Amino acid sequence: MKTSKGKAAPATVCSPPTPFTGANRSRAAASATAAPCFTIPSGKKWVYSIRGGGQGIGRARKYREHADFLQGAKWTDEEAVFWCGADRFDPPDPEIGDAPQLYNLNAVGYESLMLGLFEIHLGPDNKVCIEKGHPKITELKTAFSRDGFHWHRPDRRTFIPASRRQGVWDRGYVQSVGGLCLIMQDELWFYYSGFMGNAEKDIPGREAMCSNGGTGIARLRRDGFASMRVGEKGGTLLTRPVTFSDPHCFVNVDNPQGELRIELCDENGTPLPGYGKDDCVPISENSTKTRVRWRQRSTIEEHAGRPVRFRFHLRNGDLYSFWTSARETGESGGCVAGGGPEFTGSRDT
Image (cartoon, rainbow, N blue to C red):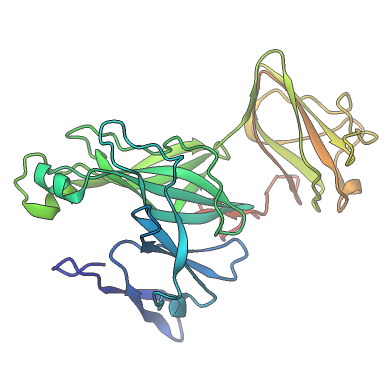
């Protein structure tokens, strides 16, 4: 947080109260901008995303991890290590022309991954924004991680953009929220904030560029970050060897005018008996959770614990994801991001 003079000041971090102790509090280290924290899917450590800089890339993020939420909030400069920033694959805004910077990084466990939103700052400089009474341009881009530290960013297109339109609530300064998104039945709801600014400049100084804020929702199909898309000619996808423990197989697919068949194969890609393409009951529907069946096999339990490969034969549609489940109702057992009405905990069970 900042003082009235714009200097960094520590915030107070609280843990949920209990009937015996009440709320626990800890004085956090000073940070001149937001320092979100989150847990990795194992739930064994907290990660703190801290404002940093240097390395020749302007604004960036530093990393701090700790097993104790309250104690972890007390970091020193030496304990917060350089983490990540914008790079040469982040294009500048063609009209502003400033070098992109990483303004913030927030993340959450989603299924078996960490889902991250990189808040990319595109400019202009604060002095320009204050003078003209409009917000800086920050936009959100997706990232994915297996460990919460190393990030994979295969798609640098903007996920949630600033509208850049005068008089519109999310003209600029678009930011994510804690937990990133909720799972609302077949959709992911991403709450985010944005600011209109005040082009009339009847609010003086720095406050002008951060005035008239609001909150919106961006909606995405569940697991809808990417898909295998093919037309009428069809196509195939063969996974690398994987192991599983659950007996039921499910897919998220949109192909009401097409067809999907799945083969279960050995490590060499040879279909296993009873699990070939012609053995699979064809799927032609638009559903985020459809059970896969074979004519002589209702489950894949007999191959649990062994390395296998899945081969998908898809025609005229999109395949978004597949997973195995302990139940016939298809719960994945994975993380559920910020939660949702269907869930009572942090996992889909």
